[in-house]
Image (cartoon, rainbow, N blue to C red; front, side, top):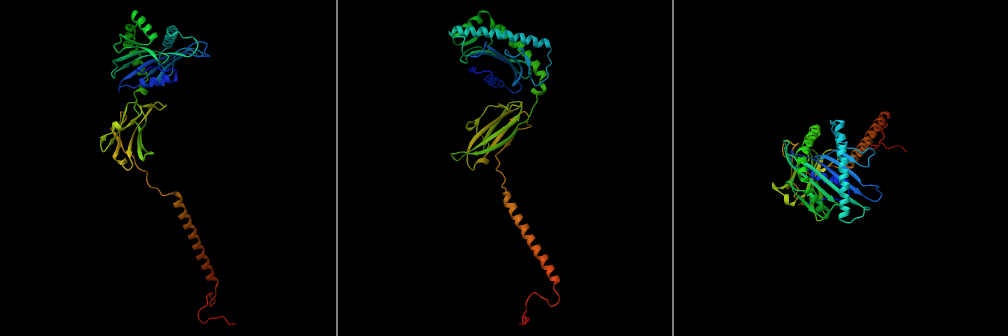
Length: 354
């Protein structure tokens, strides 16, 4: 079970990205809310973020100049002003609910209102490729440790900690699970499909990965081969190493797919090999944007002659050729000025008279 961390909202985004991992063709929408107190804050601050898959499409900040739910998706806002008014009212209502949860937590653990405290709440739903409801979730975490969550049956609760146990009893008494179940299966799913339609040109696009393999020597004289896939969308991708056609999954170092910051994703897998055996290893890449599975190996760089090794002989050759041509021209001119019998050379008995 993963719980929220204390520092929000930056680390909350990492939680969102982790939740955005979903089977190919399915989609996810969710709200991620944080209430935190701290020295220097006159009152608790509340932040609510809405995500569709890996893209933030709405936000609310209680400390903004004009608090209200704002559209921040990369696609056009097709909603009417009335819609955002209702969303802002709901955010303010959630703010009030979170403040009540804060008081519950402070009382349960006998904490002072001063100091750093965090309550985080996340809820949302997943839809299958054809738009059918898959599953929903709701979780509230207190100071990054204790939590209460709605189980997969959307009828029962799991609570860890004193404050969550008190909350579980209250929610079971007033039938909150049934209310949440209806919301997740109907309203949440409808919101997902609506936003998906508005943002389909971005969310349903495909961008094939840019792939390359790098080689790095290790201190133990082994070699690390790393297969990179960059600038791809959607995020679902498969990268594997093979040795002589045999899968090396158990020997690979794999990183999770990461956002590149420009709406695309990146990922790499690495394998350690013996020096000289690099060509026995092949990286296989499978992605929706590729017409077929791509395979590639590390290619050693082409042998090149240093540029100075080319320039110096050329320059010396040019200088030598220039010297030869100058001598020949001088020789020709000198020969043309000498008359008959005025040879500049001494032959046989033609010695000068004393």
